Length: 96
Image (tube, rainbow, N blue to C red; front, side, top):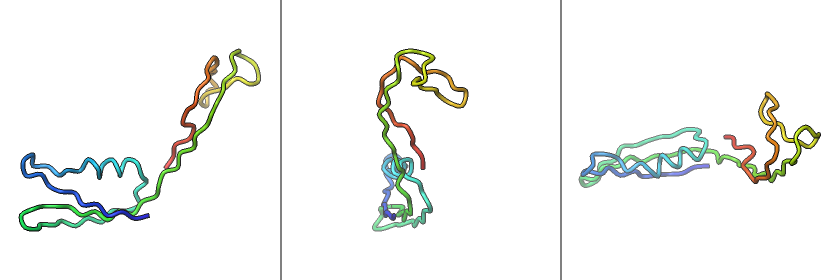
């Protein structure tokens, strides 16, 4: 997928208004970015052409047994630490 973003320079603060750009980059898997500096009638910008892949989020509903030690108990991590006594909905696998 592709996105074109224009980031303006704020002369008062001396910074680029890059909050939206940074948020987008955090939330997507970026393949490549091409940038271009633009100076138009005294206004300064960076233009970004972004190739990215959307991140997939898998939601899971999980009910954990109330008793410890039975075969339905949730084991957590590679050490098999018991979670026990929980019922929750959570993000199970978030990956890029």
